[in-house]
Image 1 (spheres, rainbow, N blue to C red):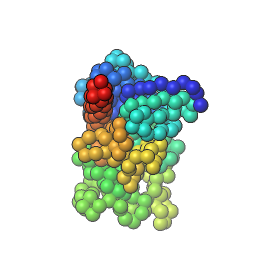
Image 2 (cartoon, helix red, strand yellow):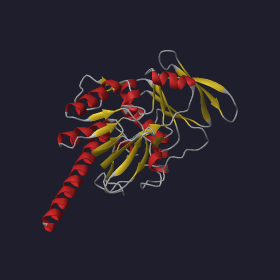
Image 3 (cartoon, rainbow, N blue to C red):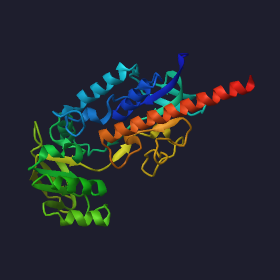
Image 4 (cartoon, one colour):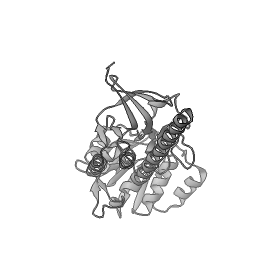
Length: 325
């Protein structure tokens, strides 16, 4: 282990919209924050081609360009942005110990966790190739659905998220194919009824995707009936995968309170976790909205919560010294 040890007032783990917003607010408060980017600087937005629903970008912007703007703004106010992956944490109200890349130890008075969540994918070569080139494969209908207005698309999944995505797309697209692996859905009864009542949503039961078709963009999907084994091709221009997200919280197992799906639990109306001086923001604690703008909002909240905590500690320390004098 390296002997390089330092003490930081605010340490931000993660560099998506939540992490950089937290850093901007902490830096403007004079707290000299340090951001460790993680193995994927910029988070999920690095996989997004055009962002049209974030305020302030009337002509849209690509995800990577937006995250570069966030980073530059954070640095402008003095944020120290470092490439590194936090591999271990030990919580202590006096100083939280953070190990980076298994080699470097740093100590922080407050920690802001913004490690985000990762979309689950089918794992098909064609799916990943088209996703990475911005060719019509997405895991967020709210983010990308607008680009397929008046077109034919598909949604893979059978839970509430898939149902919500299908319903959202049904208001924009001419036809939505819902690909369900089994002969039933996992979505709540009310969501199932809404999907079934939508005239332009076609549910394909017992159906798995074999291949997403297209070279430069989605042109269709080759699917297989899991009962008969028959393969067919469904034409489409958009392919939405809605089989869930996994919050990046493995690092905090047995250290922080989580829900049944691994999302960090915060005190209502705040970003406070069950550990003193530790805050969570963005998709790592949000299983419902999962938008860049909501992540940024909670990043602001986390920085304000951390600043108030540090101010209170400083005030109490001053009071204690005066009492001793």
